[in-house]
Length: 474
Image 1: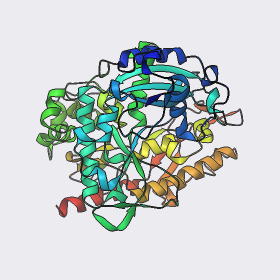
Image 2: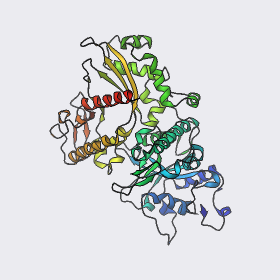
Image 3: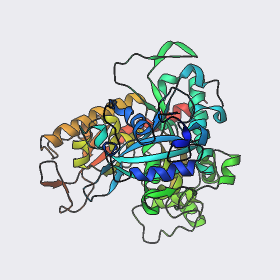
Image 4: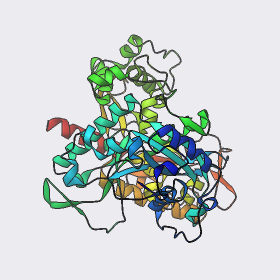
């Protein structure tokens, strides 16, 4: 960027020093750009314009089209990212952090270390601001500032994510990219439905929607947690305080997926009870979550108590789910997710910004136990695999979400209105809470019974059938 002042030496910070720039950024916290704007400045419009305005008004720099980092002399990128507030007055991540657009025809020629993402985003100055609907960019309040250097371990996972995305483009499948393909670094959709498609280099017959490299909502959630716990003026120097599932050294040798799947391989086709004994899982009280306990003991490998709360799973939004298949092929149970937050659904403007989209577009680790003989409950570990919801099913999930939203806004929060499993629509809504007094606030100022997102039994069976076909086809 170019200084608006006559020389960079007259700037109130050292443009070549990331720490100096970061220290200067603290002056924006608790304030808005209107506190700094000069008469005659023409505010920029649009969602992506705030960062440019911060460059111009606060940092006194001109914006240019240079492909490198914003503060190139300091090797640091500037990113402004929105927060929202919960009903408990806590700050929450509003959306993924978009890093740079993907040019399908060019990106296939760059390895990770020479990619625009790596050159721009390995060190970032993140300015968190409070989102306000229909608010002028000049009046948005800045809350946190953090100098975020991507930890070495995160970079190893992100590098693998990058390679997965590039490989899919090289296979001529840019149109099939999904945020669920990867862990921390996603290829998120940009633009609106109906926008013209982009050319892809290895498939000239099918265009691909516009996408950008982004750090996922789940990853940004852990960044925000770090900032809140460290104070407003944070400089990152650690990966995080959560229990880690795999080490940095292990990731230098294998991908995260391979490490986890290899932990299960010795137990495939082994009886459930014998695995429990070997892994020292106490099932004496016959707990309802005994299959999850055994799966967790294998996946965690004594590294953490709960893989779904591990550093890597939290940053990736990854969820482990167990599936029980009876000897007759029937799935034992439908698959439950979290309770519906009626306020979140009502206030969410776009499907891709919704909590349900984040849940369903994230990756899953499915651990399958299969019964060998009818009524004997002699289950064995049958299969373990990572899964991402196909795009056509995500589109069906969008219909599901819109139906839920319409009923919430209409005050129809009841079994009489939700999709039922008998409707054969892949997903349904029903209670998970056992207590009738478990109620949740609604947009009309009242409270209603808690209902939960579910996968239908038949949809889970469909997933397993597709998995078997993939194995059979090599």
